[in-house]
Amino acid sequence: LDLHRRVRAERLLPPCVVAEAGKGLIPPAQGVAEVELEGGGTASPADALPPGHHILRVRVGEREAQAPLLAVPDRVAVPERRSWGFLVQLYSVLSRRSWGMGDLADLAELAAWSGRELGAGFVQLGPLHAAVPGPLPDPSPYRPSSRRFPDPMHVRVEAVPEYAYLDPAGRDLVHALAVRARALNDAVLDGGSLIDREAVRDLKHRALRAVHAVPLSPGRAAAFAAFTAREGHGLTDFATWCALAEAHGADWRSWPVELRDVRSPAVARARREHAQSVAFHRWLAWITDEQLAGAQRAATDAGMEIGLVHDLAVGVAPGGADAWALRHCLAPGMSVG
Image 1 (tube, rainbow, N blue to C red):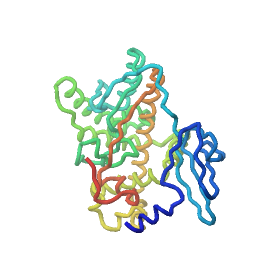
Image 2 (cartoon, rainbow, N blue to C red; image 1 turned 90 degrees about the horizontal axis):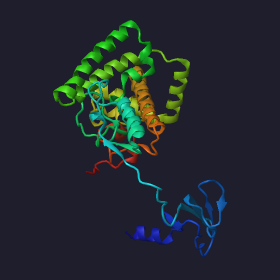
Image 3 (cartoon, one colour; image 1 turned 30 degrees about the vertical axis):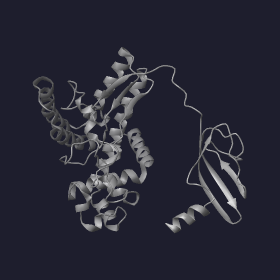
Image 4 (cartoon, helix red, strand yellow; image 1 turned 90 degrees about the vertical axis):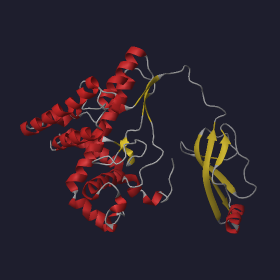
């Protein structure tokens, strides 16, 4: 405590500085200070600061410090009019073309219809985060494996462009899976059956593995490359976790010790050994992201001012992908909820 008090007393700046936009700060009594503006350039703390997330830098002799400087408006502008929209759990938005539960193509249809016919301004969704592959140990969408990537369970198989180019054997396989999925769908819509998420996930994953075998066209390959470059190590780590979870179970804390560190040589070797599975899960993340973006385009094309509003889970499952890949960011043993 004594050390903490001494550090606080001797620091040049607090952890964060908040100022009213359009006004300046009282400059420090000693030293030199300047503000690095969010939009580029610098300003004096005494200048009228534009709204934004700036950085305040101070130098006193040989000592230097910096802190976030938040210049906030006096009040947030009120929209000209209110907007309304539907609140949905996507799995329940079934159509006759679904595979036993609602999917992203159903979401696009709902957004396009409600935007054009009813004047809705948004569709609000429960979490669509990625769950663990295989049997679901916990069906709650608020305890996902990863909050960084959506779950491919919500993909419309027939809407993946490569589906149109399946070879005869692949088309027969996917058709047979689709027949079983439509039977599940009809049982929910007409028979009052409950949605069987486990069965839907299994059918979709088998179908999507067949679609993944179709080579990408040059343009599609370039789009996939752009997606993987944008997502970087995060996507590779997520896909690696999915591949390892299929091999060793859905909780990384039960894996062999050498596989529990995402940056270990053993994980790098495992990534090469499971390269096909890693590639499949990276592709799944891409096509899911594409269809989610397509649903948002359908919403805005229908005149929605907002479009999709996606609920964000408070946390992630401690045995899942984010907890494994982001161990350096998380405090073990802490929980919420």
